Amino acid sequence: MSLSSPRTTPSYGALLLRGLLAGLIAGLLAGVFAYASGESRIDAAIAIEQAAAATAPAHGTDDGHHDQELVSRAGQKVGLFLATALYGVAMGGLLATAYTVLRRRLRTPSDTRAAFGLAGAALLGVVLVPFGKYPANPPAVGDPATINQRTISWLAIVVIGLVAVWAAVVAFRAPRAQAPEWLRATAAVLGFVAVVAIGYLLLPAIDEVPDTFPPSLLWTFRLASLGTQVTLWTALGLAFAALLPRLRPAVRETPAEAVPA
Image (tube, rainbow, N blue to C red; front, side):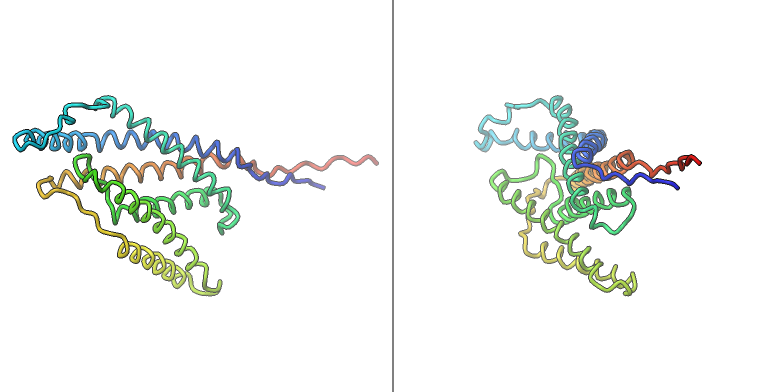
């Protein structure tokens, strides 16, 4: 006879450690992308802000704060990697937690597909949906007096993005199993679009970009910011999925023992 050892269920601690490691890797990669694609745009935006501030004394509006810089640009560039690494670690922990809670509800036998699917859902709900309503702006853009309103609105659209992803999953699974897959996919897309459209209509529009700000610089910065997030979540999903098989060893068959006559 042959005996087979059951597949072990990974503990939350083991999953969390791998999620944190995957997040660190993804965060550093995102930092490299952000440094290569976005820092020059930030420098250009700061130069525009400083040029505008230089004209302030002539109008009596300069308060002297532009001459003081708490952190130098060199320090900010080094801190960029620390920030993306910490953000990646945090998102890796959340991904591992979501995987632990939702794994049994995901209708796929593949751990890799489950992990990458969760990362893709987070990218869609946490990054792409908010970007469509409130794309990132360079440092020179934005009124400090509206920062609370902008923060609350951004958090609200993140929640709406996650709800939209959930609505798409529910709509895809709602019809009976014998329903054509194209019909279920259509229902998922419609559910997602409906929630996002309602969220976009309810939340206020925020446009604080000066007319004199170069549009090309604005959109290259926004695309660089979006690319950083896409890099992080793609790398996080791939790294976490790559680490999962080590937690589930393959079932090994035990050879039958000889029975004495």
